[in-house]
Image (tube, rainbow over all chains, first blue to last red; front, top):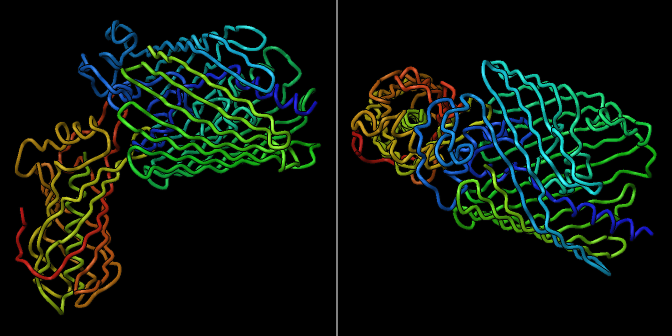
Length: 377
Length: 201
């Protein structure tokens, strides 16, 4: 029964593999902060004009000439712009992006397999930034075990002072650890940082050239508040990032969720270290301790992601991941994730991922292969 | 973009410190190895480095205590590398304007003084100098750590701030992301006895 539960868990994880757009690999290019390329301080989602520019300049194997003369501010133009720059500067200070991810998923487990073609993401996001305010919203559809759902996953309003103090309110994912692109990574989904784990909350932040502090408080997960699913409970999180150098980052995080009608109180604390030995290699490692009231003991998570740019626009990733059960360090799952990420042209991203998940106590192995075309228009 | 001047200044500071440390010995010192790192804080938080090893120069100790050095330390700004091609291009062409030639393509540190250092000095000290950057000369000051090495060589680690506006360098901004007006220059260099007090360009 336990083996079956583990198997179903793994299958469930594999079923909606849909990496977000965060790229912590860019530490190798001396980008230690999400906000250089993304509007969201927690990473992922709509790219800023600067982030769009980098996709052409640094991520793509082949690149066309930028048709527009980019200025100090304003939208990205040329092929890196919205719809490959077809609208020019019509949208003015408003940034818009469309995210489409058709993919093929192949999951193999003892006694069977599951193969399917699916549209993992079809989202549109928009943001306005001006006078130190940022307004952000997105609308999209995603497939879930219960069916396809159309919703706004993130929408928030932020104000940031010239001195780096910020306040954000709305629906967003709590800042915690390193936000890997793969939302099924063991330092995301098991810790409650999955695609539906945004909160409605208030976030205060302080940012300088050496540190970033983000503190959040919330009456509960957004979905629990909206749909009254019995899991509504107070949430709080804190994340402190210290940039040892432009290529070396330390992160300490904590997350607490109070008890709800259906779940006991719990949370996690973790440390992460990222460093880039040179401009083609980024290594991230994060360790977390997860606790839950009533459990026999803590659970532990250890995740590494090593990314290497083998050729311009060709990134290879290896990610060993380990998670234990609560109070049982001999249990849990070991994952080896391998990924090849090809970016032949601006906004075209072909990604092949393979996950080998093995239950440490029952030996059950689940192999998942995902091929996806990520179009960021 | 502001990196160039900072590099040159750091190099100069390093050389000066070395000369001071060897005051009882040879009076001329030539840079045999140098690395310059300009730390550029970003307006969105975080920072990036611009680096080069193209540091040259010779310094001569003219006054042993407090130490004063003649000669120059020069950093080739065209070799500054941030790891991003477009960023390098903007830094060199739009902000440092290295294409304008002399006075713009090289950062030069001169008139180096170590007011707290005397003959045989080793350790941490303050320094001052004049930095030529973007066609503009402006005084700089910072800290230097001087250590003696085998063979009579001296190693100097120095750092100092550079305010871009002091040199008439435009505020770097690109698609909403910019560099703050003050950058930090850090240099590590080794100088060996010998040479003449002239910039080896």
